[in-house]
Amino acid sequence: MKILDDFKKLDILDDSKLQLFIEQLNLNTFEVTSDFDEFENWCTQNSIEMLDGKQLLTFIRFSANYVSDRRDKKEGLDKLKNELFGHKELPPNLSTNWEKLRTIIDKSDDFILNMKQQDLTQIGKKLSHFGLVCDVRPVFDLHRDNVLKLLYPIVLNIRHNESIETLSLELSEENLREIFEEAKFALKKLDILKKNIYTSKDAKDV
Image (cartoon, rainbow, N blue to C red; front, top):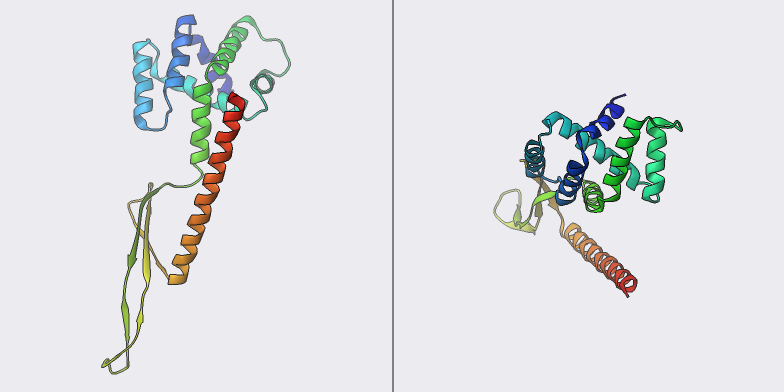
């Protein structure tokens, strides 16, 4: 089973490397390519084979996600252990690695919270460009001698972070007012959420 092979990659961490690995996790958000470059540099500096280091990191990310989805760390670790090994007693080599994993999970709160934050912000594509263009379009009579009416279309230009193409949508004035009201409502909800969260935090700190 591949996941057990990845679990055995914990062999590469002695006591000193274990603490350094935990520090590296907590300092690195792994949100951009440079974060992984930094991890690769760390592997090189600590004489860890790049493939082994990446497999270990993948396993730790999986384990941290699994554990953090449970009610608390203890329950999460117990369930993970049962998933990996059942209820059988672990031999000494696997038992040693399990204690290393437990230590990593216990001491990597910043890393786990960063991963959770990434998951919550990756629901959809990110907006990279947004623009509104107001236009005027005349409607002429059939002889094109007179302007019968003026139309005022609004063009919404949107591009997300995974595309180089801009999507253009034509809005009516009514559409624009609806978007405006929805935006005001969303901002109001954000203010309420932030206020309640900060109030709850302040109450806990008292």
